[in-house]
Length: 455
Image (cartoon, rainbow, N blue to C red; front, side, top):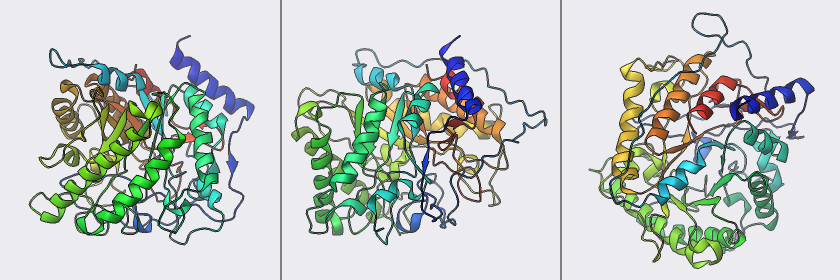
């Protein structure tokens, strides 16, 4: 029995025996949906060429019963996994491949989304309730064990800090919150998994904002957070990756989700992000321990493809001896009209096919651009958010998409992390593939396809 089949059997056994792993939130509030910075707008990327107005969806129960009646196009209910043959790309001769090999060892990742990244502008009285505020479930070791058993080797743990810091200007992180973050990191470390932690939903004029007007404050915040987090995790080995910022952008402007390099505000924002990325690297490296040479992850503007490949974006300078230890972070909900755009909007589709040029061209173009600029020259790339939301039960199309995406990315030396917000029902962004309360993979063939081509 191979590893993939064993994983599916284990998850099936959990379902049959009624094994659960979720301590659901005992509050009566419906969790909010992760949908972006101010006013919980989307925690996802718009395409670089299309500006969208993002509206806040209504809060919904994240642990609602998943839809188990999804059908294939022929109505049989049998979901199949694509058979693909992707030619492996090579790096340039003489290029050090250590970083590429490190990224490839991460294989396939899963986001613990809508969890430690949850926040509230009203600052909830019980700060520990944020963990289940949006997702409805508190994280348990059994959940992380199940994710490992399903075949995932990497967990990304988005973390918002601003509801958990002092208001005296020092931004001292609550000991209870930092302890809890560490506890869940340890769940993954106990499984010999890679873990990514970051600064997530702190992009606002009160904390971090990439413009010269707010740079003094932004630098103080970023340095304070990473000084404390780096110190806490200094002794962890290279399985822990620190990610500077999530989707840094000009929140609340016309350029929040796309970048116009003819606009001086956008150029300035890119340059500010460069400065903040450099500060992040300098702060972590100076903290000593294993932080002196661990792999670090940095984004461009809104973590988009253009944000990481435009002429103004530069990678931070690393300390002597750290060759290619800076990894590039990109988010890719591509093609947008299938992966992210809401059903019912003009142009939105629930169809995807590997035989359709419109389905695969954006994926291939994005991955080729990253391969040519970074991977083949020795710089590692993580697509640490990607996915396709459920639209009308289109599980076969989503399975085909995810399978192709992973196969194409891995052929180019790129590792991807599925965005999972534990949402399965309602009108919001249904990216859930793992029902945390029941410890079960809701879309086993989708996961099977990703694992199959992540090896």
